[in-house]
Image (tube, rainbow, N blue to C red; front, side, top):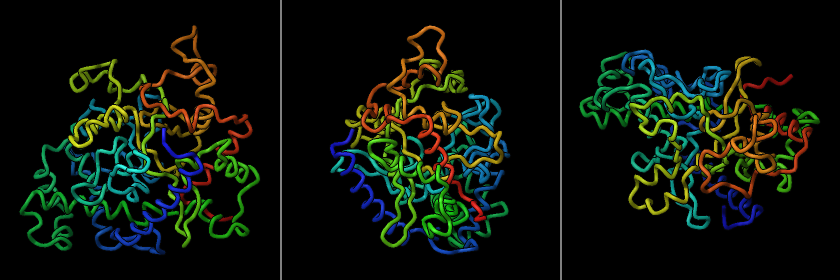
Length: 418
């Protein structure tokens, strides 16, 4: 997939990640890397906008409707039924096509760019990178603008409608106080200001807490040790000849103690199968391809960008590498949290087993009486550009898989030392 060896890629990505983190520490309205206990005025304004249920048509849908703190700032609804992997928007019966990504730690993603050395794309937000940051200089601010106007989310008709609701509502004075008395006079200025305020909150320590057991361990391994199983999982996670998770999810601190973000902000096609229960397949008024629809991922977005359209085919089926922080944060043990861009998998155990055995089992569609996840895996939704270098046959046994899962659970924010 990439020209560099795995070891070379790890070293290069680690150095770039640290440089990015240092840049973000200087550029964000409020860095979550500093010891800050209260939100500043801009972050507080962004928080109020993030939870404002009046910014949809009909009212009732807020950013927080799809990004809840109790699940690590992603979907708050249980995914016991695979159809619940995607969420219903403000209009009853309208569903999106993808699982809500995690809003936490997304603010560290850089403006989307093409890495000339490795010839792949880095940064941006949304699963397909379409919140590039090219206009506002901040991918998270541009991401904040998307759901307001999406008919399957908050369903407002245009930026002017969003600005009007904010400026005439409870947060209007706060917006004018921070951005100036004339900010509501121009829909473009007002819309951009709203996005910047929300991005400030999404960049705050409330959403990026760095408060997991692993964070405590990194600060003082002797005082906050990992369990034997967790430590073994960390070792396997980092090994190139075993778990190799760190190839895309770097786990080490920077030279000045910068905490790891557990993503390299790139894009991959993992070979995940479709989620056949996704309501999008039945939404023929918005999805004319019906059951035949295939999610193009980053490649679909690149097709809309003239300067990158010639690269679109090489990126079909690729989706943003998510941070593994909060990966299994749930409000209760019985709560089913779904994974992958389409919610096709329903536990981190299943995800790790998929990474480990994808290439070792037959394709379910090609055998009689298949049992997904047991003796077969569903066919990849998109076969093009499949990552065959870093997953598919990791050589892990059941105990090693369980150890990696145990380590991943140390990445959930809100850990309290015993």
